[in-house]
Image (cartoon, rainbow, N blue to C red; front, side):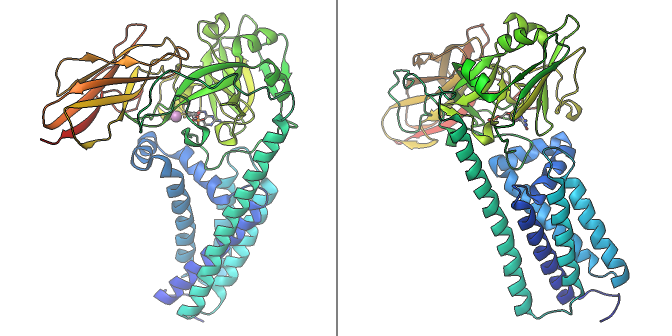
Length: 490
Ligand SMILES: Nc1nc2c(c(=O)[nH]1)N[C@H]1C(S)=C(S)[C@@H](COP(=O)(O)O)O[C@H]1N2
Ligand SMILES: [Mo]
């Protein structure tokens, strides 16, 4: 074999396969510990991405962004291995070792970490890749067989991770079966609305509730050893067990909105939550007079902070949440506990997978602050979304329009609809569950044959009218009126 020189397509193909098999071996080794190298590297790259790139990815890919990141990271590792194929064998081995070390250190940058498993995986992956690169080039069939093996290992690793998640979810339910749960809602929520097909449910089912975070897979927290510590500038530091929190939790209905939610979008969910009021949690710890800021810190290193005063006085109502829709908080939504201040956009509303509440003096640099987002919590803007009818052709002259609208924390005062920039017409509102909850609405519009632009806007109880000017999510949340096109046949 030549020690260096030009790399032919066969050699490149063989190297790509070696990279894939090596990565597959590494993924299987860590998956047993519930970790993925690819996911953790992806998470670090997301951390390092400039905000406009993150915004663009969210806009273009929506909930498929995580799959795209996984594919991108895997492809980058394989491409790097392919690039190393041309090196003389003397330098190739240290280069592969360096690639493995870089992968491991990128994967270990942020908690939660599994150092031993990550190092073992990177080592195993590098060894397999090294062997693969030093063998003489195989034929198409040999490479194809190895590629299938590598792909199979990647799939097996995802299956192991999924099994770990299922076991965790059983653990969650076992830990919350018995008295500490108390999470079943007293009665099914009802707003009296006759819901046409296509209208969002009053309470968003957990499976449809949007998920947004800076991880590629949810951190799985063991409830047994978990404690919520309340520390920093307090006279009585606290350590809450999950059972203690659950025992004091109250039910509340509220909508949670991601600041990336576009006009008319679905990065929003209306939940029936259970949580301990932050005011009570703070009172027990007794913040010192110097404390000005409450930092909510998660096991993934994410933080979101609040000015302390409005939370202490109850001007802003917040909770340490332990339950959603009659169930313990699902892993993806922050099990075992998260902070939620209804009315504040998701990225400011508190940490999921809560590890501690820290009281500090002076402002705190949060996860999003260095990424250019405003420092203070941003408040959800009043918003009306049209769910019905679907854009497209309709028969008849009267079109029934329906949707959901929200204006937390003060509540929704009204929704108005109009066609083709005409007069705003008041919509009927279904019964309100709570001011912070969303409300379903409907209206009938009489329209002539042809195409019409139908719009809706929300008005909050504090007198705020939803802004019609279109703005992107950065920096204060998207604005503009949701507009659909309805076509009436002649
Ligand atoms: N620990 C942690 N908490 C977090 C985040 C995160 O990345 N890590 N993302 C925030 C953002 S941007 C939003 S919109 C909400 C989303 O909550 P959900 O996924 O339960 O809908 O969680 C917030 N809390
Ligand atoms: Mo978000």
